[in-house]
Length: 77
Image 1 (spheres, rainbow, N blue to C red):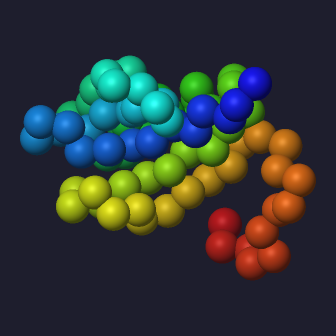
Image 2 (image 1 turned 45 degrees about the horizontal axis):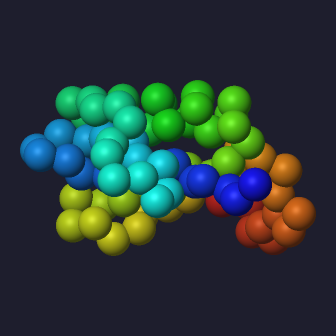
């Protein structure tokens, strides 16, 4: 089974969650924070990573909620 990370992306003037490889968004929200909260809950259930994007589409941050075999050395959180 391949890992399907969840991305928080800009979508039609709002924010949405989208699984890797999906054509359609999963959930939409008014703010990035609301979309991240939805993505985080889903990522915890599925043990995957949440990738947060900026309004221009570039990656801002990511958080892992799975069993990461190589956890990060830096302690940013």
